[in-house]
Length: 183
Image (cartoon, rainbow, N blue to C red; front, side, top):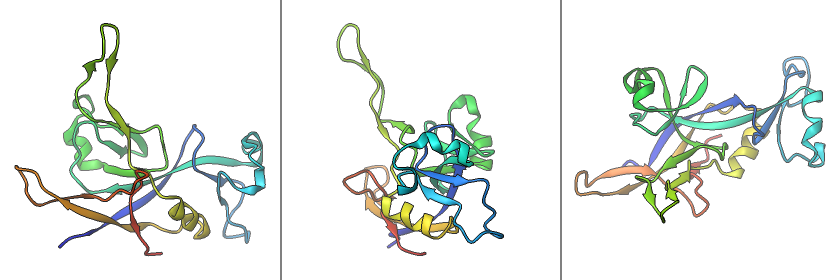
């Protein structure tokens, strides 16, 4: 039974407030200092306005997979985060991109179905956040100075009438993936 899947860990800069910060002034080969910090680090006492002048850049983590990309999936395409759609030419994206299966970016959401009218003036677009990366892994990633390139995530089996034996990423009650310790 296949209950684990190996996925890639990718860190990318963001203009938004990310889960991590990376000090662009520190050369890890010359300095004995970790350039990677958690955003909630005690160094800044919660004042993120000090980050930019100190050379720090916000970062997000992404877990990516070679799974088939479908319309609505979030992907890393040419170093950018995009949502796959017919307009983004799914065939090309499937060849050159990696599907994001979990992230620290809370702004990435997936559709849960077709929009529906709640009343005469309100249309509801059912959505949920993309699965999140657990805090325990973020801490381990920082401690390892970003030198974790891949991890295994736990998979769970479920069935549908069309495909009775299918696997999907196992999530906890906080919508976080279950990462099997490999670092």
